[in-house]
Image (cartoon, rainbow over all chains, first blue to last red; front, side, top):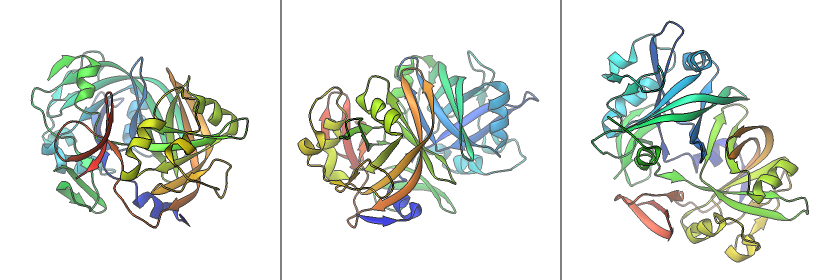
Length: 177
Length: 177
């Protein structure tokens, strides 16, 4: 065991990481979507998820104001789209650009994404500061699944065992073979 | 898209999930270790991780009191051991039972695990309640890597693409093929 930099140690551990799309609504009533890798479950009952969102992201403002978000689970057909929605600062309608079809949620205003494998409607339950990100904790109030099944989309490394579907700089997105 | 139960929707999304071993120390000075699936990165700079620990776990008491923990990353040779350390309420020395070799950390009292691929020493930076779990946020103060490389150990589903290495009830542990 060798003491090392965080970056070298993280290199051993960062993949595979499932990614999700997160939707919410701005103060203008318009929906927004980003790709999130830093997410986890945090409670059995009621079911809760936490997501970490950078302070400088527009999504941070959307969730802070609307107090809600949707976690949408992309499959293999949304690889390029997930990379696009992960980009910072783009002033475009990403739903339109990526062909993400919005559906009305049951309990909240944030849209579901029809092309995803599952959607979880979350009401903000708690939040905490963690350096340059805020950790938003959402309680799941409604859940949806798609009729078609598919593999979960992942951030993958350069080791074997994955079908790499899209790449952008350090990010490689794919599925288990 | 069909409205459904949380369980059915989660079934689409819960794998693969990397697992980690978390160590900390009790008020008696003795180290403790558990397996954790609910963990994520939460900050670029400084580097921080969050882990969700059930209120009724002894590890919850250890971290609350010691204000520190280690995240140790298991490889394929710790599949059975990860299932054992995931069990609740066992009053045994899991390090000894599982052959987990302890090493002194650099910055904190919680031990590193020599048989793991990487170790991250974390000082508690913040915490928040999320229903039946507490979310502990730790700032990484030292990092370690093993000379031997291996695949990350995962909770896997029953789909193709994985070598399943150990099973216990609903938990299947393996690596990407």
